[in-house]
Every structure is written in C-alpha cells, then in structure tokens.
Image 1 (cartoon, rainbow, N blue to C red):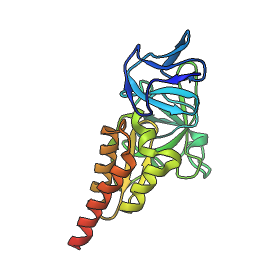
Image 2: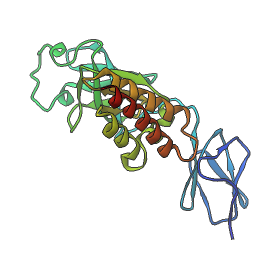
Image 3: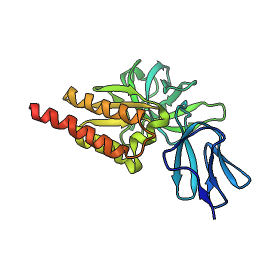
Image 4: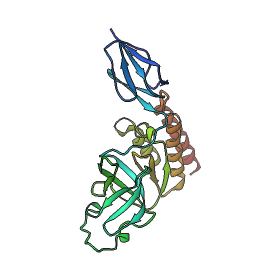
Length: 235
C-alpha cells in the first residue's frame, strides 16, 4: 500500500520524498527511485489522484503550441509582425494569420498592428529551433487598446486562472473588470472605473505571492468582498 508523504500545495526541495510505494506516479519535477517518488526541484506539490507533480516557484516561460499569450509588437516587415512574448526568441504573426479579414500583399501592416501595440494571440507552432508562430484568428484574439498590462510569474498562471477558470472568473465577477491572462505571465485588465482595476490587480498579485497556500480561494474572496464593500459604501 502506497503512502503519500506530502500534502497538496506543500513546498518541497530537491531530494524530498513525496510518496512511497507504487500506488503513485511521478510527473513534472518528480522522479521515481526504487519505491519512492522524489522531488527534483524546488516547487509546490500538486496532487491529482495518483499523479504527483511539482509547480516551480519561479520558472521562465517556455512557449507551447496552443498557449494564449500577450505580447508587444517590436518589428513590422512586409509579411510578418514580430512580437515580444517574454521569451529569448521573438514570435512571428505571419500575414496569413494576422486577421480574420483578408490582408492583401503590400498593405501597410502598421494599420493593423503597429510598434508597441499589445496583442492577444495564440501559439500555432514552435519549431525545433524555437521559432514561434502566432495567430490572431480565433475568439478573443485581438489588439489591446485601453486598460493596463501587469507582469506575473508565468509559473503562477494556473493558480491565477484556477480550476476550470474559477479564480479569475471570481475576480472578473466581483470587480466587473475585463481580464485576459496570458500563459506567458502578462495579464491585461480594463474597467471604465480605474479603482476596480486597482482592486483586481491587488487580488492577482496576492494570488501570485500566496499561490502555495491552502484556502487561497476563500482568502481572495474575503479580500475582494472587503474592498468592493468599502468602495460601495463610499458611493
């Protein structure tokens, strides 16, 4: 009979034993050594049934196909927009994937996305040489105009989003903010009331700082209720 040596959301260091026996399976950040599952890095334990993995406390973003990212236009050529997504290589939006509308060859591409514009895009391909292709064709993929962009640790993005989007949905509902969370750790927020933006930013930063603790959803809910309640009382 296997024995779990840690709890979900525990912080561990390399060499810590996560479980004994063959009833559990190691995933990212963990490996099997004989009867034991061992941590290979500093991270937060994620227990999903029999599967044990570690979420790094700090990790650089690694682009993956299917990720939704937020990036800044840094170069415009005749057939591509280059985008800084916080990775060593800039990503590329090819002309064919720049819009749901047809873009003729020879068009002034800055009329669509100009230098320093921020966009929400989807990663369609990552080559072996780490060349990254993006697409603007899909629901919610667009240029961002109003609002603000904040940076968070990309390793904390799953906690900010929550299971099936529960955490970020709660923040949206309680602050009335429009929010997009990029897998690369950039977050866009907008509300006509800047005070609501500030509350949403504070909530997201709290999640980033306290991503490893138990009961975080309830803590963030109480925080939002206190902030929104105070604001409503002032009104």
